Length: 107
Image 1 (cartoon, rainbow, N blue to C red):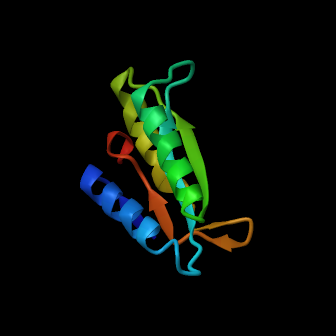
Image 2 (cartoon, rainbow, N blue to C red; image 1 turned 60 degrees about the horizontal axis):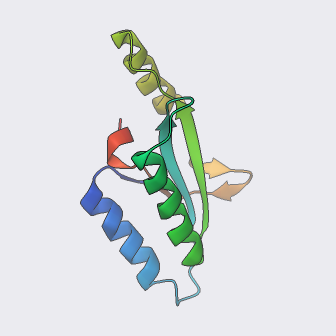
């Protein structure tokens, strides 16, 4: 599974998907992110726009989101462990070769 952890890498993956969208290559892509309950802003908008662009490029795309709490500090460790325990290489019998993590949420 490819995990994008930086803005430049996200752009390269997105550009790759767009460049190859005219071909009959349809990828299953998961966007992995964290979500602070009852808060939305720039990161959530970025994830929504990325998902829309990948769908428009002809790919099966979905978002996997886990709750995030930054206090007390041990909660950050628990969030990291939760992501590492999550297996997203397959979903509902479909292989997921590409997972994208926007930079702010990279573990």
